[in-house]
Image (tube, rainbow, N blue to C red):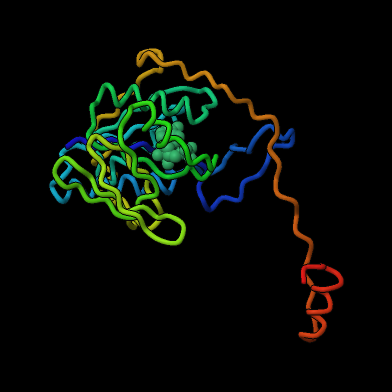
Length: 249
Ligand code: AMP
């Protein structure tokens, strides 16, 4: 079974992002970039399926600038077999990414496509769902357990107040939640080996898709700075302040 995993290059989760002075976006100059954490979980799940003998090949794909090759190489070091970069310098919205991924799905014909549930930069939580709509594949979002059984995949989903398990006909789309697995670190020998694994670069034109955005970011703002807290001397004073100053009780 071929597994396709979508990985996104994002600002590293440890970085405290700065908004550009003109409020046009986030300042990316000299900022550490990494693989989106939910995509790391997606790669790990695919690697575990391969180790179990369920997956035969893992193809990783990213849509974005040439620098996204770094994240694809990381995925190769973690155990993916080959990589595809759909190279574009355009600002992408989720539908554009989903269209590019649909073209790769048409070409590669995977049985399972694994994406993160959410990219930590845009917080969109919709690319997997859009890809499911474009391909017509079954979808299991927010997965905390994935079990392939014959021509089906059982996905346990994290939903409000509990878990739901759904059986999806293959081919299917799965998006990963935090508790699905704990991703491994790439070992040095595997990082070296990954340099020799195939990484193909294609243009959106060659795939026959237009990634023109239908959205324009008007303004990006940092959250309002929090004012300093105060110390109260007693519970009575706390209750008095909550009642009369904060007016929350
Ligand atoms: P989002 O819907 O933007 O929150 O992203 C959800 C998931 O879609 C990510 O975790 C990735 O698996 C995938 N994805 C989003 N953008 C890209 C991209 N530019 N290239 C590859 N995969 C992406």
